[in-house]
Length: 170
Figure 1 (cartoon, rainbow, N blue to C red):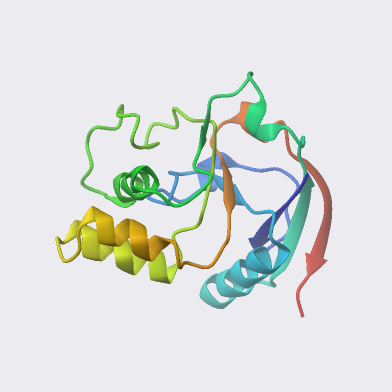
Figure 2 (figure 1 turned 45 degrees about the vertical axis):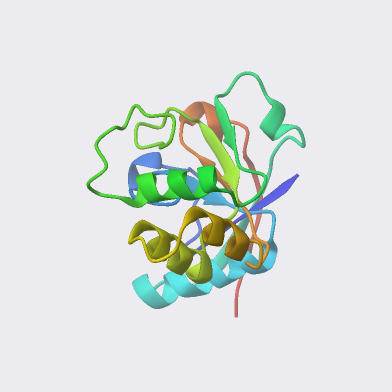
C-alpha cells in the first residue's frame, strides 16, 4: 500500500522526537493513503514554517493493520470512541495517559482512522462544551468528508515504511 506524508522539507530518516504532541492520535509520524490530502498538508506546512512543499511516498505492507508484531488501534469510521480518543490526545490537561482512550504514552504503535478536519473539530468542541449531545455528534459526523490517517508511534512501527519517492509541489 502507498502512504503519503505532506511536509515542507525532504528527509530520509523519520525522527519521532521531532513529532508534535497533542495531535489526533498522539505524537507520531502521520501519513495518509490520499495524495491530495498529503499535498494540502505540505502546502499548509510550507506556509506556516517555510521550506518547499513536497509529498514523500512510502510503501507499507497491504496487511499493515493486521500485523501482530505491533500494537494497533483502528477506527474504521468516525464514532463516539474515535471522538473521545481525539479529545483526550489533544487535551493538554488530560492526565490519565494510561487510559486505553488516549495515546499520550504511545501504547499504540500504529493508529488508523479519520482525520478530525475543521468540521469535525468544531463538532467535537461543541460536544465537549455540552452544546450538543453524543447522538447529534454521531449524526453530524456522518456528513464529514472522507479522509484517513495512519500514525506511527514507535521505531518498530516505522520499520514497516519504505521511502520510495518524493514529489515537489509547485
